[in-house]
Length: 127
Image 1 (cartoon, rainbow, N blue to C red):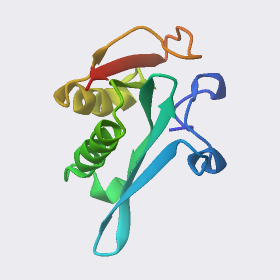
Image 2 (image 1 turned 120 degrees about the vertical axis):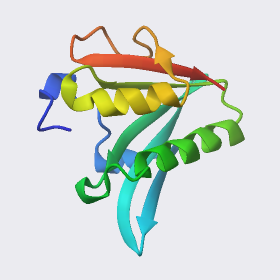
Image 3 (image 1 turned 180 degrees about the horizontal axis):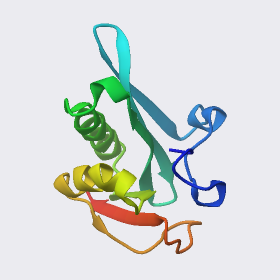
């Protein structure tokens, strides 16, 4: 992710922030091997999907879909009214945007502290 995005446009949470209160970090294992991760950050009035990643050798097997479904379930369990996310706008993030679209996310304006950025694509899902 960081290799594909300049620092000023990279909004992934650093490792220590993934352990902060208000963040749920989920991992998916296959045969005891961690193949996918994603985080749900609780914000003021909504949740935000953060730091989704699938191991290269596990791509194309539905790992990201299963992690996303679990994160959506966690947001619903918290009673959050909606989920937002920021992902890249370029070709390297096309599969991610397609995944989110299939899950019901739609394009939206920047939210929270985000600002318009040609390298960012913002999406939301009403729960």
